[in-house]
Image (tube, rainbow, N blue to C red; front, side, top):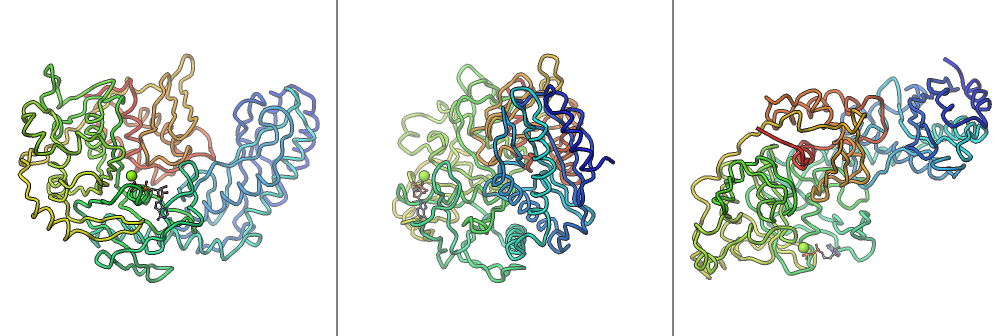
Length: 567
Ligand code: ADP
Ligand code: MG
């Protein structure tokens, strides 16, 4: 294998040549204490930057094995190292010419700790993937600048961020322990009869709608009401006390601006782990909890929404419902059925983003518009059956309708950002103001009809290209000739997740979507492959910017593909 000196000479020789000549450096180089691998060089200084890897031998990186021996810990350590690399690379980075020249980047990373492809670790190696904007003046290679980046900066970054003795041992230990505790609590939820847990002292509000860091000064720390308080004896941090949200139907009520949506949002994101000091690092939610909302305008393909919607005008089918432009209520019904199809166990609904006519139909409206003139069976008449028949719990923010007191198992009132258990009060009120609304939900929830996606309807190609995928932002995906709008899929939190989802759709089409398997089977197969073989199976060569997602988000992307057809 050529060494560092060889790379240096090669880069100096390339100085002044056309940019495409950078291709000559693709390959592996032996540096004094790591291997540098150039997987793909870019063809142009303005194109997506080049893909690099570094492999440091285990004995040189010298991380104590206890930091990566369990899956939780390994994911946390990898996350920690990704953040260190990112911080350090930013601190020494500078522009070195046109386009992306000078960039050394790993992946954009937020408050969540997700399994990622940016850093891998085992006893043999620490491997880091990153991108480099190879330097150019105009479209000519800047060889000296390239030498500085590849032969000086990269070794410096490796030295400072991938060697244990240069890092803060206490911080790393804390990082892996917090993540491990969060995973541990999440695993305990089901046997404790809970769907979510919010510890005392948690800081739920965020700095702003576009800044996911904790609100710094005026945040009111979360404190559980006594009656809902539960304890977990965590492996690392010992006794943690907080509010357990029980299975069944839970209502979050309270005046406007009292913190209801903030609580629900924290629960939504509790399917993921968060970094220490996030404020939500021990807020954990059942891993199969899915946010449900109305999403008018979305495409729906062949969904059996008959548990909620029947006899539409013009005899339109609701057992095999398709539309290119859903209404608020039909989109919310489809979002629920699709989540159940992917095996959701908890539904999370916020009145702020729900369709009112899907949520309630009160007594007066029942009197005015007869049942046979109203296609919608409101959620209120189905929510108990969902739990009784399908074992699916619901957490619902509902400040505007007391009708739900009838069907709730637990009622939590948010007052001045603090929860209070008002279940008994709500039940008394429900009896006091008796209520002769007619239940419209029938005997049973109804069935989930499986769908079989057709392979030719999921086509990632574009003109001569076999695969064209682009992810501009978390919620903007280009798949072949189509734009997929993921803006209503609120549990996708990271562009790296969207990238991985796009790649997983291609993987699914190539491997499992055969016109015979159901969508649920396909999702399970893809997720199992990723679990056992890692996210790298999704891409033709190693990448730094894929992050784990759940089957629900993969299903959401497939379901929003406008070309989709199903049997
Ligand atoms: P609601 O859904 O009840 O109308 P929100 O959850 O939207 O209320 O919260 C209203 C505002 O209060 C938001 O700006 C939010 O950031 C802030 N907020 C929420 N929880 C807290 C808290 N615990 N401490 C301080 N501010 C909070
Ligand atoms: Mg709200």
